[in-house]
Amino acid sequence: MAMTVVEDWLNACSGCEISILNIGDALVDILPKLEFLHMTALIDHKFFGQVGDGTVMEIPEADIGIVTGGVRNEEHKHELEEIRKKTKFLIALGSCACYGGVPAQANMWKNEDVFEKVFRNCASTEPAPDPVDPSVPKWTPTCAALDEIVKVDISIPGCPPHPDWIADALTALLEGKTSWTLPERSVCDTCPVIREKKSGGGPVKRWIQNIDFNPEEGIDKMRCINEQGFLCMGPVTLAGCAGKSGVPRCIQARTPCRGCFGPIRKGSQPMVDMMGALSSVGLEAKSVLDRRAMMNRYIGGHGFLRPLPARPVR
Ligand code: SF4
Ligand code: SF4
Ligand code: SF4
Image (cartoon, rainbow, N blue to C red; front, side, top):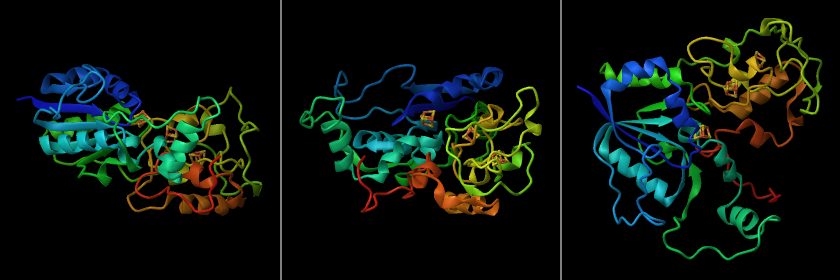
């Protein structure tokens, strides 16, 4: 018998939904066993405000809930809580849902300061008062990951998540399993570059210089990006972005890992660990500009990013 699915996006960009479509051949096998009852990306289902005139949220009961995006406002929170109530297994899909994602960089400032800078006093926008329309949902205190609000059963990180893992997790549920997780390995563990455990030392280089590689040669002939003196988040980032096999996606493109799969394990401190990794190859870890933002780029939920008293709004 098919499992029923409710899928919805909250503070999301739709890249995670594209990853569902990108499952490819495996989707052909899985789809007959799934019955999608609700998917906002396919059928725009507005609940309140704008052209949605509802007073309650009509989420159908289902076996599986898949939610992308973090929680940025009260409507997202309400929607997430409704989906949690109506589904047996909740999947947080993508790094916004698992960790807050890039939008959670805003957690470095108080909401009032963000409104002041971005909405009320932006150089490219006419100043305007705050909207008074009650259908505009209020912001939540922070941009949160789903598991800060409700219990999450399965987390599939990545920005975007790799289609292989979406298929894998759904297959696990279809086979009667109740959990699924990626193995605890780092991006470095799956990276074939040459490593000598030392760099040239000095400050971490900025991206106004190119890394050194020969485009005619394979990745296994390229020197580690950290050891070349640049910031690569591979040592502290969960492996999996290449799917079940292959070279990490950014490294394939000869660019550094930015940390989009999030921490290797729950409870780790990626910024502290990354500072240690840079120091271990002889680089001056404290020279990384705006390192709180750079080293928590996708994981600003869970209190990783919060306002500091001395931080000015720029
Ligand atoms: S995780 Fe990435 S792809 Fe998915 S909603 Fe967030 S920004 Fe978009
Ligand atoms: S630091 Fe970056 S380039 Fe070096 S091994 Fe790790 S992922 Fe590869
Ligand atoms: S290399 Fe890092 S930033 Fe790039 S896709 Fe993989 S995990 Fe994400």
